[in-house]
Image 1 (cartoon, one colour):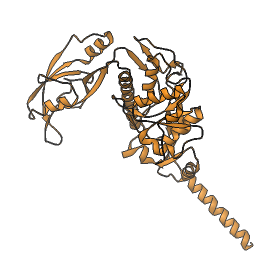
Image 2 (tube, helix red, strand yellow; image 1 turned 135 degrees about the vertical axis):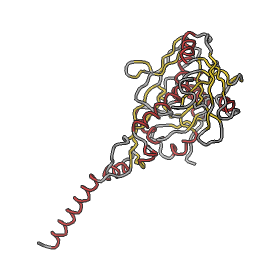
Image 3 (cartoon, one colour; image 1 turned 90 degrees about the vertical axis):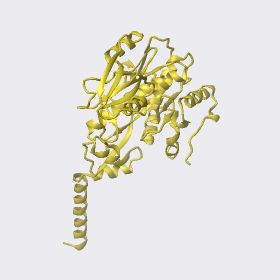
Image 4 (cartoon, helix red, strand yellow; image 1 turned 180 degrees about the horizontal axis):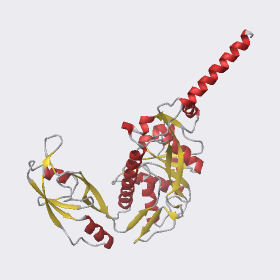
Length: 362
């Protein structure tokens, strides 16, 4: 066999072996890609994303789209060929598997965590939106979780409203631990509560709770051995003056908070926030209306532009990354708070685009 032919044959065999190895050998990476966008002013699966009852609402137009990122599942084994293709593809990002699923989390555990964050983001979006409109919202301290086999198990339940601890009124969730730790392990502590069922019934009927209970619990020693505990985690929930439902399935994480809040504001105000424009965005939001950063900003920009967005509301801490790779035709608008966002939308309605706060590459 001629040397040249033998060399070509050997090279071909090596290439085939490398390709086979690339397909068969898993690598510790996962892939992120642009996910669907959803108009918070529109419908999803045949029903409005935002439904408000008990308060006058107004017609809306345009788009206020939340954006998402698709990720490969925790159990998916990416091979080397897929990883290389993902690195070369402009619209995809390949990241270490542990970035998306840290500490060996299963997909089920990650989904549960994302669902909890999504639920909390909806709550904060409602609070922030009503705060922006000057509509009072009542905050209350509740039992968020009860530790299994703890002194509180069977005595306190998730959703119980904590009114006082040892007779001292509770105003912030930190007040609960502050009062409990004044006791020594083995001593009793008294909780004044509104049971969860009564609290829910009172909220539904828009009335003050009629039933309160005093529950005495004997404290135990914390795992660290340095304080008294009863085995609960306190949290905060809110009583809204009317009903706001957010109907969106198969979405997780906290990054839709800003867009949900703006959608609520738009439905509760006579003037259109968008002026008919297609606006997308992202960002976490807290009860005070502060906007926080999110992951996968590059993917969300691509998804927004492909859906037709012209402007993208961008958390300040994501601005530099977003500005470094902005799709053509998409204008970034920097936001730190919900108030920033509403003021920028007002400028857009007036055609004052020159004064919009922008993102820079740093």
